[in-house]
Length: 146
Image 1 (cartoon, rainbow, N blue to C red):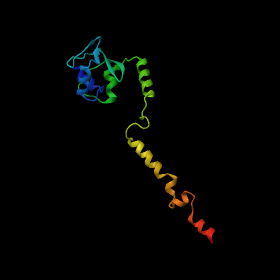
Image 2 (cartoon, rainbow, N blue to C red):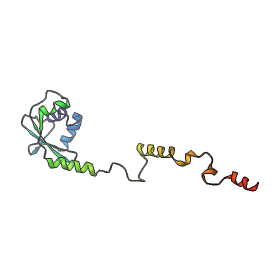
Image 3 (cartoon, rainbow, N blue to C red):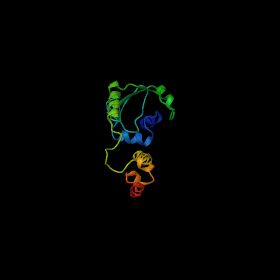
Image 4 (cartoon, rainbow, N blue to C red):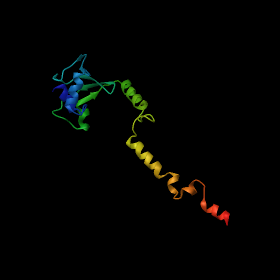
């Protein structure tokens, strides 16, 4: 089976096109040498894949006939990636800043919802008479005059 089709069939890449592009960018290799998309994969090959800034290593146990379900993937490959690589991935995920810095660009959908919720729950929205809100009451002025 071709390597691009193999990586797609074991669900390492979402589409065959993406797998082919990654192979062209030399992010996939068998053994020590880089490969072309047409390279045939055999049982026992160790494939090195650079994805998400870590180096995965998978050993081919069995060649699937076509794309397989996620539960069947362990029957066809064995993950031999170094544990240090997974620790690096975990550290990168923890260190990522998921939200943009304040004042940069337009508000996100989440920011907009937070602002709308704040405005709805704002103290000023409970008052119907702005004079009462600011502590100025015309009624007390008229009471003083009488």
